[in-house]
Image (cartoon, rainbow, N blue to C red; front, top):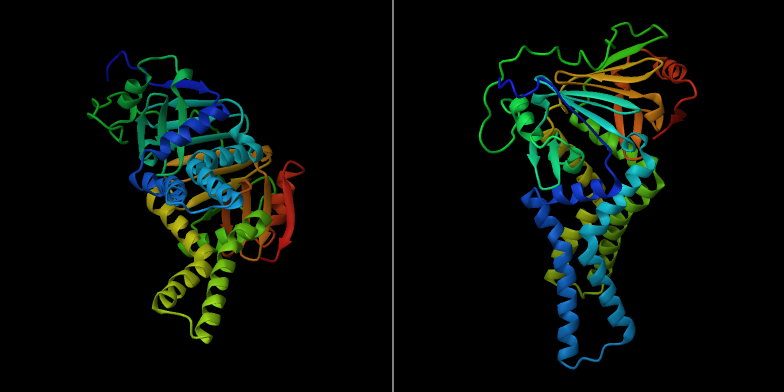
Length: 378
């Protein structure tokens, strides 16, 4: 290894709201299909404006209400890719305790280690999909959608990215030329991050441990249950089935009156089922895309709990989350859901929990540090 390159790189960053917002906009431009999908809304806005101009140019008399409605729809469509990320980031920072404050990034020959006031996490290089440098950020991709952004304005070393490539480039995609091989003595993975070692004793009241491997359909079912946990999500996702049912009812009425043409029949056959099944389809697609793009999503995970918090470990990662960073814990008929944010939760299928008193013992370990809810019959 080049003696000028340190065995360990460390930097502490405190991303602001605008850092997070800028990073999201940068990541949105990283994928072709993201650009295509997000371009649909501005194109719809431009099309609406063009239609308004055409109607005015051809002498069509438009009322004030109709004109204002067209302009409002155009404005919403044109700015959709800008205000939606801002809203999501604001909600995430408002509801997630571990997204605020400073985060220390440490890199060595074995991987990336993160620590904050309420969490610790370590990932081997094999668990990192790729690393990219832009004008403002170093972006560390775990999946196509999950990214750790490091603002370059908070990285004082101008050679940081090159040194980072030298540490991990043999096992992670950094783009460009391949780096020289690293010859330093490997560091024991996670040794510097946590002295915690998962216990196999699942009955001791001081520590609970179990190994989970959730199937594809368990994750789909858990996501549907999480939608039912929040009234906002339930209302939002109910709009699509209601729209599908309205299309179906309208089409049936037109069919009974003999006014439904071939185009109307096909519109009903396409839009009604898609609207009715949209929540299920979007959840299935989301779970599929996560499992397809995340190297860790299909591996068994060891969950261990003690009085400090939750510890997770897998083949290529280990993470520690303090109880104070866990928003709430819910038990349903099928799952124990451990929420880090209102929309992000760790899923433990109850069929893989042998201890019938697991939830009650978990509540005892957490004490008053986390919100535990009685059994939810969803």
